[in-house]
Image (cartoon, rainbow, N blue to C red; front, side, top):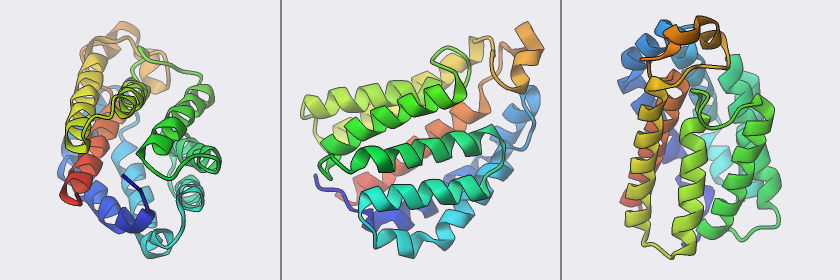
Amino acid sequence: MSLTPVLFPDLIQALIDTIEAHADEVTELDQAIGDGDHVFNLQRGLQALREHAAEIAQLDWPAAWQKIGMTVMAAVGGASGSLYATLFISLGKNSHDKTQDLAGFAEAFQLAVEAVKQRGKADVGEKTMLDVLVPVAQALRQDVEASKPLAQLLDHLCGVAEIGVEATRDMLATKGRASFLGERSKGHIDAGAKTAQLMVAAIAGVLKKSQ
């Protein structure tokens, strides 16, 4: 499967729609153990990306990822803005010497997630978006190497993301404001992990329809 940014406007609209549909749910999660502004910050970044969607759709992927990262950095506040900017800018840097297909993306995405881990000084098990991004990156790489059909691959990634977000419920938060709650952070799903899972599902939906 060859990938181009031509679907980017559809992808952004799908992300906007899914975050809007789940805004109250995610805000409630964020207010329980976080700052309560995660959805607002994310929506601001997505709206900024929609404004640049037509331009980004005309770029090759390395340039597109770089543009997305810089836009997110400028528009999104909070820790999630910095981390997502790192993800996309790293994707841009790591895409230059990769094939512009699913295999190349899988390799670049795994490297980008590693950059997010370094930026946030966090890893799986600390009640963050990485509890979704890391297993999704690993599953994507494995499924691509196994030549799994795209629809099956996408369904698998959605399932992995759901498992990842649910796993945060019983984790002890060690990063961000939630870490100050200690044991009281347990019993709540992490808002950043939830929106990461929602976005994985939204992207998968667009890609399946485009086949």
